[in-house]
Amino acid sequence: MSDVNMKNSILRAYAPASIGNVSLGFDLLGAALKPIDGSLLGDEVDIEIAEQFSLVVKGRFADKLPPDADSNIVTRCYQHFIAELEKQGHPKNAIPALKMTLHKHLPIGSGLGSSASSIVAALFGLNQFFAEYFGKAPFTDNELLLVMGELEGQISGSVHYDNVAPCFLGGLTLMAEHKEQIALQLPMFENWYWVSCYSGINVSTAAARDILPKQVAMPNTIQFGRQLAVFVDALYRKDEKLAAAMMLDVIAEPYRKSLLPKFDESRTFSEQHGALAFGISGSGPTVFAVCDNLENAKIINQWLTDNYIQNDTGFSHICQLDTSGASVSHS
Ligand SMILES: Nc1ncnc2c1ncn2[C@@H]1O[C@H](COP(=O)(O)OP(=O)(O)O)[C@@H](O)[C@H]1O
Ligand SMILES: N[C@@H](CCOP(=O)(O)O)C(=O)O
Image 1 (cartoon, rainbow, N blue to C red):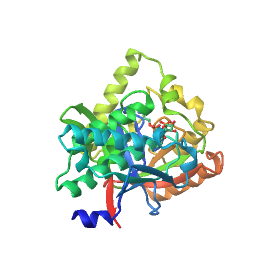
Image 2: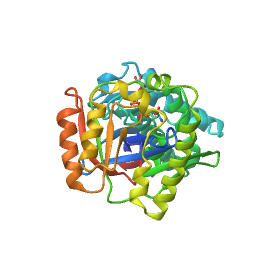
Image 3: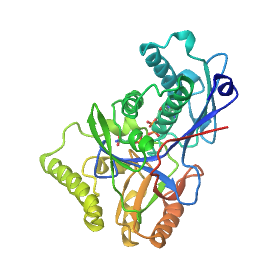
């Protein structure tokens, strides 16, 4: 696109909600979500050329964020991105100032990868924007993912890619954390539905990490390693039953579930009504139930809506995996 056209256009980046850990892969496994009814479950960031940098925050959860733009992770994404462009040799006066608008659709502290969604939409959007402006993307996907992890780490207290990676790449992702290959995309069963219910309360990721013990007992370490290895093998062999049987959390759930009213009842109901697996999404309070048919998913979705949701902020969606990940459009 020419410089003149870019001055009159807005690039919009979308980044979906995600389930961190997926029960069996603490900090190592994540899944991107897409409600089957077509509703939007992810943040959007608009980018356009302006006289000077500004961040406007709109959307259902805008008022739950700090009011000053400097505290918003999107501003930090912009500053980091521009500093990296300068390091690449782009002179300051060759980089246009930008207006960014965050549409904050995801609740904060929800276990749906809310900060990751803002980070991915901002950084993917900036990379796409400058790809059009300079005629070449400044960063590869892997370089971008490294930066996304770093910014997520500034919020939650430690770098973990299990939200940013699926949100960016789509589908189910396993972290390799090799400098040239941060994340790998795994196959998934197309008939699996992921009922995801946000109760409406706030659980800070940093606080939910602080309550975990710093050491893991030997039997749990062995179970964790066995489950993750067998799960990946079962996905590749398309063995649904074995894959689902591995979806148990021996690392975080025993400590975190006490923060989640009605967690045990929700698991019991879901399992009695055909859920193949049930767990905490990220650090909660969102929970998820995996079903291999829509009928069971609908029954569980209704029960969680009626019983797990605590206030008007909560919601529940029947989802499948969002295999596209982050995307952009123009207006
Ligand atoms: N754009 C943003 N989206 C979400 N959180 C943000 C954003 N900018 C700053 N924050 C701050 O980051 C923290 C995110 O909390 P956290 O518990 O990690 O949420 P989540 O698990 O939903 O990402 C909050 O203190 C919030 O105010
Ligand atoms: N692996 C992290 C995932 C946190 O996800 P969030 O959606 O709660 O930010 C953890 O379990 O701490």
